[in-house]
Length: 315
Image (cartoon, rainbow, N blue to C red):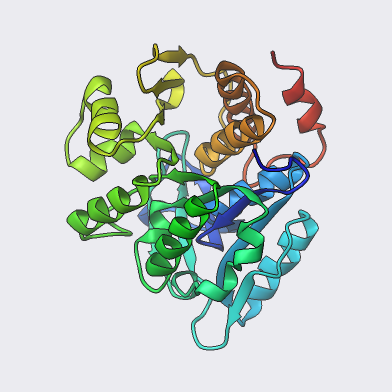
């Protein structure tokens, strides 16, 4: 096992601006105004983990523009190191307009700089110190980021690093579904920790699969050991090869403020607990608790509460 004092998680993928609608439960075409937030799934995970005291790194590309400056300021404010966040002089910072909803949000992406991740942003000497290498289907959807991530995932695996992926697939991000499936299979050959939602599965397979079919696909066809299937308000089911399923309910919330980033909060909690080498059921409870905290706040996790102490009380 790698030394616990080394880098906990190296997040690789999209850093962008989320413009989240101000009006609740309306479609994009009916949203009148938006509030700006730092976003991107791997970026959210990096910021959440840094908030919890984990040693993280983030490799991503942003524009050499006002949004890029805003992003760097916010990353530093949230104690996320920025030495592997590159500013591209040609491509502008990617932005996404998102509806504000308690369910799966609608969105319109405008992608430029986030796809321009290069191998020199993920140095071998840093991978050698890393315990978990995390990315997303979003990040893998376009080159050169795709080739970079796949090459570095292979290198990380050979170095004994645990891999992780959020298969946040959407045809709006990745129209070529067959290429997406091929790429996901390529990444999964390194046996990552897999996080996927029922909505992700429906988009990836263009049909609703039973939980048994989902777990059989990952375990038997992709040879993945651990699959975490998030079920929205119904909670989560985790499947490990040749072990009983673990299903836990979501925490009850009276008023959901914003669902954007809830999945990232969940996976941040899971990876944080995994780094602590907690039993898997405790990892899931911590993940669900962090997701619940996020659901009750718009944008990032709240700054005015001791999130770490709250989570560590969970047994």
